[in-house]
Image (cartoon, rainbow, N blue to C red):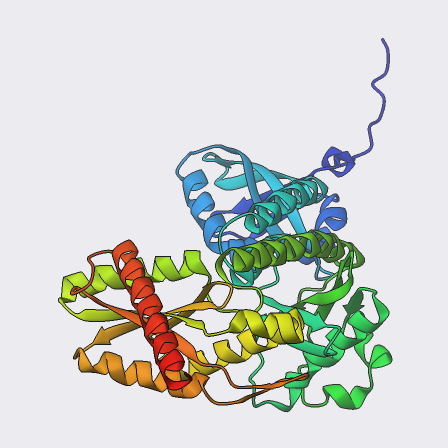
Length: 451
């Protein structure tokens, strides 16, 4: 009879790459296989007897406890995912297959490290999210809010800042700040110092409590929280350095890694393209609505504001006025002194007109030397003459330009809603005709006074 070979008392669960965990009803580890050290960073005896929930990333604890309740009620959880904080402070993504053993009164679960898969998925999602935000309506602040959500998902960084650098002015600003610093604190210059360093070198930084003093003078951080971890990545465009992303970890048990630094650098590349696109769209939008010389609203934007003002005037049964004006003998200025001088004159006129009206009013340039003004909430028809005289007096003062000292006079026409029109076309037309009538009368007076 063949003898039965002696088998040493091995624990075969120690051969598994996945960690096997046994937890009692109260949530304490009863058994953890050897693979836990590779996955969680703790040896089995460092976890056994400890509450399972203490190892879970704080942001996932409520969701994890809800899943535990469902398992205790007999539900099998074959693909539940959450995040754990490793012993070294790194975050690890775990996929669990767990079930409750009623006979043993324990929860048995197998843990698989899916951090790399989640990281890859998150990077793909980040590219899509940032690209979508760059092409969505909204300003840069809306873009930065979306980027913050992406960075928080990737790096668990609720403390996030965006620094933008103006190379021409050599100025650094922080248009988006979500961080724990108080503006009155002496430490509020810490992010500025760090970001300036990254912008100057063009290289990303990983700063930890152990390395931060070696990179920056220790005195800089005397007033600041020395326990924070910092990640900073430059934002580089094809035109040069435009800023930096900065994330901070305020949890002493969590540490950023070199992989995290590479992730933020990856995000910053996408952010640079998104910022450039937002800026381009903003420039195109501005060009479509504003006059490039005077920076006043153009015809399209002026008519849009006039339409909105008319809606309010009809609803509230109030008056408004539209002024139409041009500059007498402006062509002679261009012919005599050149178009550059003519442009300087137009810019000066636009500035004076803006000073003649209230903030609620609109001054627009609709072409050549023709300007329009929308005056809201006119209480009396006599107010129109007051505004007209104010404009005439302001524009008739001498202009000291680079190549000429000029005095030029405006011709002004006006239309009042609802007396002279019900819509924007009727009001503009009436004011235009009134302006040409005023010009004819002025020319007639000029001829009469100079026989």
